[in-house]
Amino acid sequence: MPATTPRIRPVSDSEPAHARGLDLVHRPRRNRKTDWARRLVREATLTVDDLIWPIFVMNGQATRSPIPSMPGVERFTVDEAVRAAEMAAKLKIPALAIFPYVDPARRDPTGSEALNDNNLVCQTLRAIKAEIPGIGLITDVALDPFTSHGHDGLLQDGRILNDETVDILVRQALVQAEAGADVIAPSDMMDGRVGAIRAGLDAAGFTDVQIMSYAAKYASAFYGPFRDAIGTAKTLSGDKRTYQMDPGNGLEAIREAALDVEEGADMLMVKPGLPYLDIVYRLKEAFGLPTFAYQVSGEYAMIEGAIRNGWVDGDRIVPESLLAFKRAGADGILTYFAPRIAQRLAEQG
Ligand SMILES: NCc1[nH]cc(CCC(=O)O)c1CC(=O)O
Ligand SMILES: [Mg+2]
Image (cartoon, rainbow, N blue to C red; front, side, top):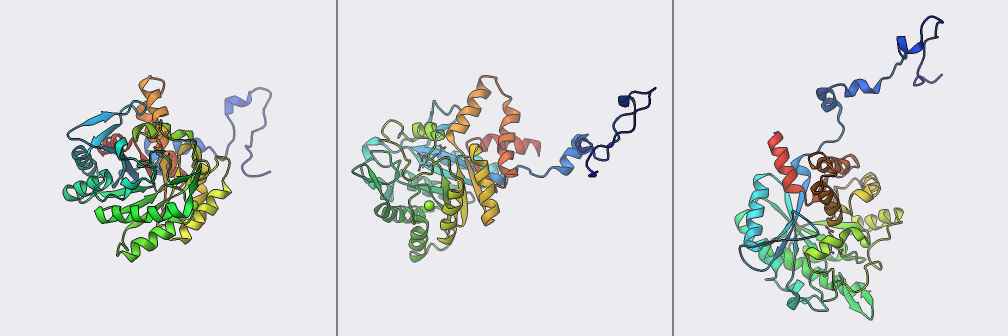
């Protein structure tokens, strides 16, 4: 009999079995009996060091504008972004990820505004670096906030051009590094862009600028609210399925990540988050690189929407959702809940 099989004492005629109880060697509930015991055996924990806060920036001054499909999230003008960075630094959030809402008049088919060294992203980088130098700044490399068609790359006759796009992405990364980006995060899913960006950064002397590759980024409906936030939802022509991954594929994520590791990625990212925890687990197991997950806008909207309706308990569901990433092997999470959770963790001491 295997040791794990419960041994039950023989039942005497006079005494029902339940009166004496089960004769169990293993009672897993013992380790859950009290709060201190649960804390003692807990495998995964969430700390403020696990958080990256994605923020949206826009033109203007002293203004914050709400994003209806992401209740509780606001776009910041650059000066407000500095205040947000200050708050984040006080809470000890390690890093911010910056996403711009680009004035539609500045968008064109080639996304040329991405190469303007005074664009919103660069202004934000310089402003935060000047006032809050201790916080890490991550910038997205992809053309979608800057193109009139909302695609991440150059569009020709309905096709996204790979190599021509990579050429522009390298220049976009250099413009961002020049303005103070600490981490370049290519989210475009073009082939070969990590290697090209690494070579470009190194040639320009930015050998310390890290690359966090969106290695496994899926063609997902969970990005809907983000596209509202950066104003591409209405303009996007078609979908992104010729460059973002098919949600049915897992092994392909390993091959994609392997290429990015070979090409010099310092960190990997999986996106979306909760629906793709199996991918987080597999990439961490396969490569052992710092691995991040992006709890994206649609995930935020679903959770926050349910909280605001009183359907779920926000105090519990948000930390639980983030702890799940840690359990799956993630080293950190990009989440719009970052300031709220950091605040709570600080209060708990
Ligand atoms: N390259 C753009 C980009 N960078 C991050 C997100 C999504 C983030 C979110 O939904 O929170 C997207 C959207 C997209 O690919 O359409
Ligand atoms: Mg790739």
